[in-house]
Amino acid sequence: MRVEQISVFLENEVGRLAEVTSVLAEAGVNIRALSLADTSDFGVLRLIVDDNKKAKEALTENGFTVGKTDVAAVEVPDKPGGLHKILDLLNKNNINVEYMYALVHQDANNAVIIFRLDNIDEAIDLLIQNGITVINGSKVHKL
Image (cartoon, rainbow, N blue to C red; front, side, top):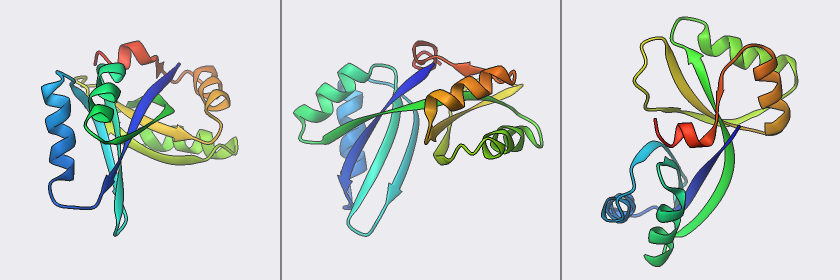
């Protein structure tokens, strides 16, 4: 139930993000979700894309440093308290959320949140055991 996320390390300079999106567009790679964190010198662009292999090859060929991380994609009820229920469950079981961000998804009842967790396998098992939908990688890449 893990989802592969790619991370692109960028200098914090004008136009670098546009270079990434240009490379991906030219390679025919669709971005499903993204998060950008920065410092004064560099940024980390985290991406869920529809074709990881093609994205990594295109970005590497164009001089970008690309990493891979496993994350969990979780359906969160789109109502007050929906996210809290999941975060509270993780907290009560001493599982740390390192970061999270939303995924574009067309569903009136649920949002999809990408979670980077300190113990991903334990977290996924816990969520599933508590009736929370964790989406597998092949499905996430097609959303």
